[in-house]
Length: 292
Image (cartoon, rainbow, N blue to C red; front, side):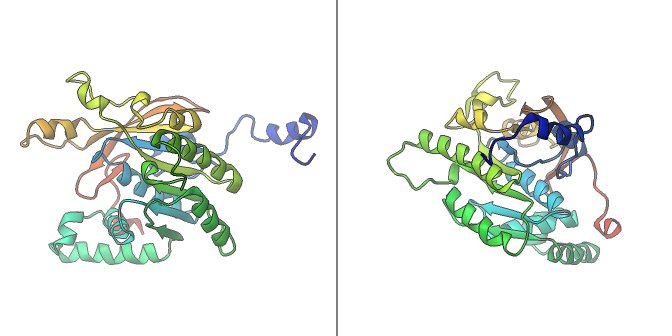
């Protein structure tokens, strides 16, 4: 009975961390870390938002923060690997992604890009951009990578683009099955798994002054909410202000709503959104040349 443990044998191990829960892998946002205690194995964290509100950006923020301490495996089912790396460069260099792509950077900014590229070369980041990838393929990749490196965190962008390969199931059943398989993946490899997810349009048609998303807005399956350890929802009022008034100003304010936290408190984390670098943070980040 290898899978059965006597509480007499296990209690001493629990007592070691009874009063001080170890911090997991940082998200790079300290206020969020204080609530979640970082990204911990074998938890599944869902990052959900309406389209264009920044779920891919937040996953890139998390990935860059995590890769400073552990090897990470990232699946981008919508963006190409090239675009993901370009977004990471702009994020690390703290420069405008749009101006970088238009070759409008000044010399000092280009130096920061060079520094960011050198930094990325030192990061143990593994990328895959296969469309419609299945959990079985992800598991196979992890088995192969474990031979070379100990993956510390898995990122998937995003859940609704994954596939089970079973065409007999309707989409709601398929998404529910994927969410359950994500839990098994996290447990089997003892890693935190962070997955982006779409929200439906209910929030857009609710109260005209309150578009904040809710758990019930998770698209296609209540199983996502049930199976996840943590659910983070992104909200930026300025996004809606700009939709209604093109002359409105993006004030850079954002909220990460901890809608579910199985082992801690829920609530709203106030943070900053940088439209130029497409990244979230506690506040203004240190200049890259000074940071490294």
